[in-house]
Structure formats: C-alpha cells, structure tokens
Amino acid sequence: ISLLREVTARAFRRSRLGPASPLRCRRRAPSRRSAYMLERVQTAVVGGGVVGLAVARALSRSGREVLLLESESLTGSGTSSRNSEVVHAGIYYTAGSLKARACVEGRRALYSFCEAYAVPYSRCGKLLVATEEGELAQLDAVAEKARANGLSGSGEALVRLTSAEAARLEPEVRCVGALHSPSTGIVDSHALMTALLADAERHGATLALGSSVVGGECGGSDAVAGCGAGGRVLLRTADGTQLACDEVVNCAGHGAPRLAAALGGMPRSHVPAAHFAKGTYFALSGRPSPFRGLVYPLPQQAGLGGAPRG
Image 1 (cartoon, rainbow, N blue to C red):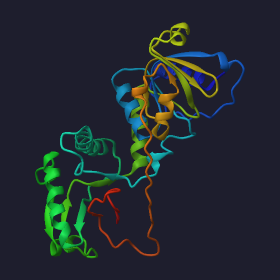
Image 2 (image 1 turned 30 degrees about the vertical axis):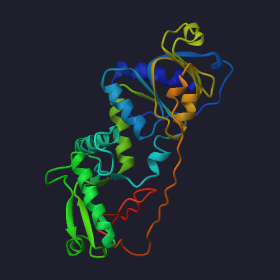
Image 3 (image 1 turned 90 degrees about the vertical axis):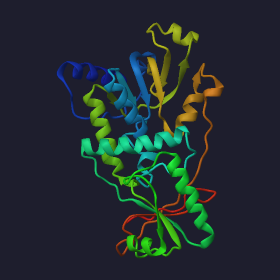
Image 4 (image 1 turned 180 degrees about the horizontal axis):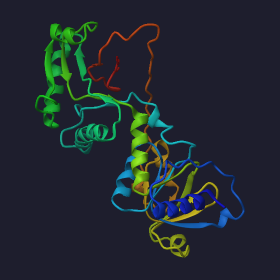
C-alpha cells in the first residue's frame, strides 16, 4: 500500500474519531502497484516549510480537505530553518506594494498568532545606524518610507536618535545617528511551524512526509480529463502515485520554479524565475553578545547589511 493511500485512510479515520497527534510518516519504497495508483483530494499544498504550513492551516480552517506534501522526512528543514528569525517591521519596501502591505499586516498577524498559540517571540526592536555624517540624510529617507508604509504611533513609528541616545540603547554601538524600530522582533521559527502544523491538523489537514512531487498536468489537458477521478490538476509523486486535485498551492521554496515548470499545461508566463542570493551568518562564541537587540547598518546595494542579535 502506498504512503499516500495510508495517509488518506488516516485522514478518513481522523474525520470520524476527531483530531490526532501530528502525523509522522516514513518514506516507503515504490511498488509496482503504486505506479498505477490514483488518489483524489480537494486541495494539495506542496511544500512543508513555514509558508506551506501557514497555507495548509488557512485552507483547512476554511473547511477544505487539505493534503500537505513534503519531500523531506520532517517539516521546515529547508529555508524555514536557515534564517535569522527576524520579524521585520515593513520599513524598506516601496509604498503601496504587495511586499509592503504583506510585511506590515503579516507582522501584526504574526505577533497575534504567537500570543494566541504560546509561540516564543520577543518584540526587541531594531537600531538602524548611520556610521558617518553622509548617511544621516539616508536615515531621513528610510523614516519617510516607513511612514508611507503605515508605520505610525508609539508602537510602530521609527524614532530618530542622536548618537548619545543610540548609545543608551546599545552601549557598544558607535554611530553618528540612528533610527529605532520598536515593532521589529524575533520569533522561534521551529515553535511557530509546530503550532501551524498542529492547528492545521486540528482542522483536518493531513501531512504526508517523504512525498516528493515530480510533475503533473493542469488545466484542461487530456491527462487530467482522462484520469477519471475529476479534479483540475493531476500531480505525480516520486513513488508513482497520482493525485487528482481541485486545487494545488505551490509552496515548494527553492523548488517552486522547478515544480511549476514540470506541470504540463501551465502557462510559461506563470512559471516564476529562480533568483538565488547568498547570506552569510556568523556565531559569536566564548562570551555573551555585546548587543541587547537587533542592530543594522543602513541598507546597501546588495542587501540590508548585518543583523547582530543579543
């Protein structure tokens, strides 16, 4: 019996018996029988990182039947576990852009979620520093962009600081001026993902680990119409299982462009291009961090600069 048949059966049992503990499935070797197996599911979410988990949670809470497909042996083992865990305020994006709106609204929603589900976080704030006189005008430009993005009021508005005021917040920082972002923070990303998964499963979502989606068909293709199970998208997994789905959400992280390109019938204009960037992280060992919170230089052409954290 295939992995997906197993999790489908467990989902059916759970729908009758109530919520179960988080599902952990082992990868199984493909069989000759599984190569011809066809399953039916309303919604498939491909990718079990933080985005896929959040999408699966939202869709399951809306009443959909959700199957979350993750290629690895555990959730959140890719980009979601390799980042600074910073909760950004929404300072730098172009005013009115989708990124700006999503960052500001998402930060507020994330803090509310953390409070409701006991996810550890700290609204520690961030110091954005100018290290020479010529950068002071850039501080003003950043503050104006933050205001345009809706950061206002005592809990969100950026505060302009002199070098002395900045030193009172961060005694080890040397600068000629700074901005303080009170709504920037950090979050325990693994606890966040655990909470998202638990709530998704509480509302009926099913997690299938070791389930790599390798291709499929979408739209009105002959393959979709001929599968005989209905659905608008046909997915194929590495073990030969086929899934007929009403809808598919591609949350495959770095693999999302590759997955989109592997779906027959997908318009080329809807296949995202892959843009890779490298971040370098350093850990301070042997003594406590000299910083109390987050400290950033002004944005550079290649990125946002460093982010020392206490």
